[in-house]
Structures are given as C-alpha cells and as structure tokens.
Image 1 (cartoon, helix red, strand yellow):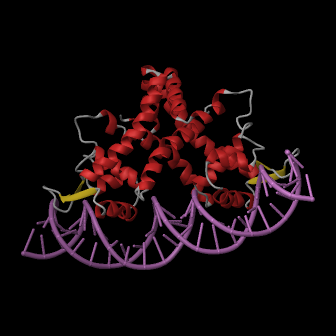
Image 2 (image 1 turned 90 degrees about the vertical axis):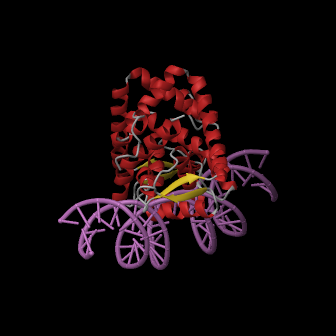
Image 3 (image 1 turned 180 degrees about the vertical axis):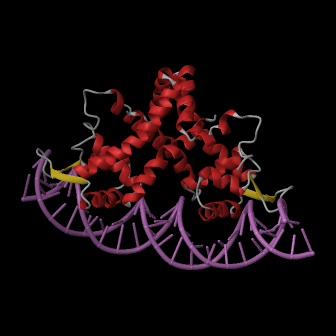
Length: 150
Length: 150
DNA sequence: ATTTTACGTCAGTCATGTTGACTTATCTAT
DNA sequence: ATAGATAAGTCAACATGACTGACGTAAAAT
C-alpha cells in the first residue's frame, strides 16, 4: 500500500512548480485552480465553479474578486439567464494560464515518456476509479457538457 | 492533457474521507500527514519528518506538539545521538492511524480492482516518474533506510 | 405576486503555512 | 578542552485560504 505515499509525493511535486510561479504574482494555489478551470471551460458560471472546487462562495469570492480586479478574468452576464456571470480569461489571464499549464504539462509529459503509453492508460484508469463517480463523466462524456446537470 | 484534472479530482476525493474522520478529533490534514509518516516509519527523527513534509519546523511543531500532548505520539531520545527525538505512535495513535489508513486503503483497493493489475503497475510507474528523483529511492531501495542520507 | 435562484458582501473564526530571532542540549572537529 | 555545528524547541508576528452565519439584490420561475 505504497499508493498513499506515491500520491503524496507526486502531488506535492506536481503543485510545487506552479506554486513558485504563482508567488511571483502574489497568488496562491486557490488562484491557480480558478484560472485552470476557467481556462479549460470558458463561459463557466460561478456556481459551476463552486461545485467543482467544493469550496464556499465566500472563499471563492476572495480569489475570484482579486483575479477580476487585477484583470486576469472577466465576467459577462449570461445571455439566457442574466443573473449568471459567465467567466473567461482575459489576454493577461490566458498568458498566466499558459505558463502554469506548461510547467505542469512538462512534468506530466516527461513522466509519460518515461513510463510508456500502456502505463499512462493504467495511470488514468486508476485515478478515474479513485474519484467519486459523480465527477467521472467530466472525462468520458464528450458530447454532453460536463457541467450540464449541476 | 486531462491528467491535471484527473489528479485534482482524485486527490480531492482521496483526502476527503480522512478529513472527515480527523475533524472528529479536532485534527486536520497536517496531523494526518504526521501520523501517517510516523506510523510507517517508527523511530523517525524530527528533521527527517521535516524533509519529507517540506514545511518549517515551526509549522510542524504546532501539530506535532498537539499530537504529543494529546497522547497520539511519543518521543524518545535517540540512542546514538541524544539530541534527536525519535517519534513513534502510541497505542492511541496506532488506532487512529489504522482508521485513517483503512479508509484510504479501501478507496485504493476498490480502484485497483476496477482497473486491474496491469493498470496498477502503470499508475505506480507514472506517479514515480512524476515526483522529484530525490524521493524515488524511498520506494525502490528496500535495503537502505529511505532517510539515511538526509 | 411570491418564491427561488445566482451572485455578492460583511463579519468573525480557524487551520496551516511563512519569516526571523533566540535558547538549550549535544555532538564533532580542532 | 574548547569552539563550532547540529537537532530540536520556542516566541512572535503575519498571510492564505478555508469555514459559518447573516443579509442584500437582481432576475427567473412558479
């Protein structure tokens, strides 16, 4: 049962590099998560973001507000439901997102190369089965929006 | 590049159950990490623990002190080097450790079963290659103490 | 017209991390 | 034998990112 420690060390190092980058902007891991999920899902609503991050709106509000005020994320009222604030990255936000994305991608690509394609399939399968079922459709269901039923 | 999100969701759910358990004791994830590594490595020194957790001694001191005062961990002076405080779980500590260990093991065993042995090998290989090289010997080198050169 | 929903905000608290400065005991090297 | 290095601990101040609870506003749904 080394898996527990494998996960601990891998996750620690996986988040270490981005953390350093973020510190240069005065941001933390919470900002990273917001930038990441807004970057991958432009037009995402606040409540969708909340359900992904599983934090309270008060917690999100602080980091999101900061990112909006400092021009990394912009909000536009929803076309169908004008109560919603659809979130997307600004140019500045996209730049930071790309930097963050790249350091993590590099680490993963390296690990993938060293392990081989078969190992990668196994890696993904185990992680998938490790998470709660509710969130698995985000990865398999390509036709349906991963946020449609929230 | 779904790996980033796979890791996020899997890790979030992986730590979710223990967190609930710990809350009943008034403990947090920091306590969990200390209990875990002391549990797996009885007789570990404070500085070895620090190098694993990569936090400051002041941070560790708070949680470790709590665990010692509340009788989950006991300290004994090192036999060779009496400056050291060798850490190990008390009976009470072992009980909590086992509870925590079990909820995480269950989740992993389930995921392993659903994915198959080959996938497990891939999973472990990718995680291993994802972490910094320094820490990999902890998993492969069985003959040498994983803390000997720190 | 009323209720519900989406979002935001104010206020207070807690857990866990940080830096920096200093102490004590013990080991190591000169 | 003494001087310096190391292991551990402590005090103080601070930052981040979580939390709860209460309340407000605008828009949608009933």
